[in-house]
Length: 148
Image (cartoon, rainbow, N blue to C red; front, side, top):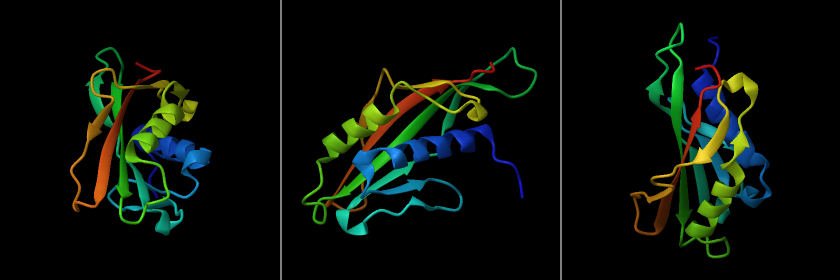
């Protein structure tokens, strides 16, 4: 069994943070990975799926002895099945709840990253969906290494 990377630890920490937020009690929360799986199986009939994508390094520290990513971007994909989710909040309301749950949150120390902030340039983005009845939105965050 291999140890988890700091990137994977950060992704899992974000997923756990969303899991503990009361606003997402009925949502299905997933971690994007090579082996996709539920982090938390919510009520599938609610029609809301939240996927914490793999964090993507944006810059590396030139001063660190080893590879340390000084800035990492995080994306959270929200998908709402409009035909099924008639009694759940709108995609914009869900995106706002995700933003409130993650913005200014400090990742656990073992992740190697500090405070997570909403992206300044593109906080939210519309995302393409496979079906016209699925509304999709990306919520973008960034964080910096506490090591670099």
